[in-house]
Amino acid sequence: MASSLSLLCFALCFSSLSVSFSEIVLMPLTHSLSRTQFNSTHHLLKSTSTRSAARFRGHHLQRRQVSLPLSPGSDYTLSFTLGSNPPQPISLYMDTGSDLVWFPCSPFECILCEGKYNPSTTAPPPKVPKNASVSCKSRACSAVHSSHSSSDLCAIARCPLESIEMSECSSFSCPPFYFAYADGSLIARLYRDTLSVPTSLHSSLLLPNFTFGCAHSALGEPIGVAGFGRGLLSLPAQLAGFSPQLGNRFSYCLVSHSFDQDRVRRPSPLILGRHDEKKELGTGGIRFVYTSMLENPKHPYFYCVGLEGISVGKRNIPAPEALKRVDGRGNGGMVVDSGTTFTMLPASLYDSVVTEFDRRVGRVHERASEVEGKTGLGPCYYYRKVVNVPRVVLHFVGNGSSVVLPRTNYFYEFLDGDKKRNVGCLMLMNGGDDEELDGGPAATLGNYQQQGFEVVYDLEERRVGFARRHCAALWDTLNQS
Image 1 (cartoon, rainbow, N blue to C red):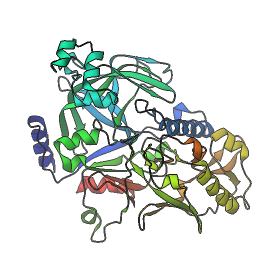
Image 2 (cartoon, rainbow, N blue to C red; image 1 turned 90 degrees about the horizontal axis):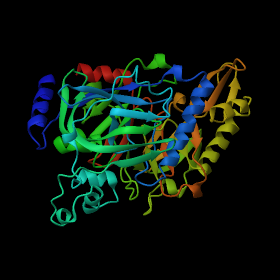
Image 3 (cartoon, rainbow, N blue to C red; image 1 turned 45 degrees about the horizontal axis):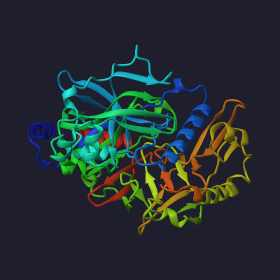
């Protein structure tokens, strides 16, 4: 495989044509949970639930406002190198909920980043040559500004009128763009340079003329993002321009962590391309459960799917109609999002799930109301030995498209340090009243509920798939094969 990767790198570096490639590229996802950021489990869960809710609200903002940053309790990062003289390392959040690759560039100022960014101890941001800027006439410039035509962008870039009329303003750089999110913002410019993608076999996949955003100032966010959404500037979209086999399908398998740093010493595999499940696991293989992607006219970069309902124990709770489809204004559907920690549900569905869950668990165990207030999660219960919780199943649109969640994916058990008692909480969240979820998705499937599954994004077939996996073993198997 190393020789195949070398040939691919050669082709990508010296040709702009599509590359025929049947192998996969395997990359490690690193879980970035740091206990030093939090003084208690309550603090960690409260911060994570708050940021999950803020990101979900951000999904309902306008196009040029993105729902960043990611939740601090469950971030997954990728490492790259930029340029070649010399190569400069960068580490970015992996995010299927956005469609741009951006990161801080030197010189960089981070406002209100205390505790997140220390210039004296953090590796300096990469330097980008000024001649690497993207033209205001490019498709990339129009994509990042979304609502502006190339002529408008040339005018913003102060291109003379006669040059605009004669389409001769390509030498002017794309104007800076602004992104806002729940508790921060950034200003960035578009550049092109060679992006080197390290793989598990120590070979590198080189992507020349890769387009990215370069931020010299940011508010509250010192780390960049590798957008894996469906937009023109996402990493899969740009990779597909060189090799459709690699860019049109990717998957990841998140190693289960339960907020325990010791449980994520092994990387979570990110797989670019299609791997042969039957070849890896014998003739039996594994069975993926697929559901179709829904098109969202307002947020075209989202991976939206339809949710039919949720089963709690033997009771099937139908989802509201807004969760099954997306209307012409971009309302509805469920976003599959690697950048949100906890699953967010509309109030009507969430309340029904909680009522049924509490009916089964609350009659046996004492409600931990104080813990609910401190963590932002609920219902929570005190227990002594073992809690019997009902099975939770997600039913997606499509025949047989049901996913049984492991217990640890929806019920988190920990020690309440204040009272020295064992407590367990339901790990689903209320996304707000159904009527308030206008202009965006009705729900989000968070990465905590995706742990222990290989989640496949098949862009060619326009579908998302789920298969129960031992993710650390998958990493070993793919490396060996």
